[in-house]
Length: 78
Image (tube, rainbow, N blue to C red):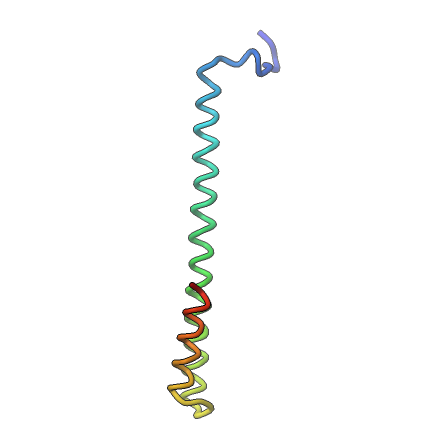
């Protein structure tokens, strides 16, 4: 029994298992990255809408101007 097995000594059944587990791990990382990115986009959109609502409330801009900015931001994000 060797303390450190070499790749040649690994049984043939273990290699596919390691490949499957590695693939699942990479897939999980990708899914987490996508959800994090989408959450950040949603947060930015909400912050922008809040800021525009504040400008409209104080009278610095009209609702039409705010609406155009929000529409332009939606087109840009797609």
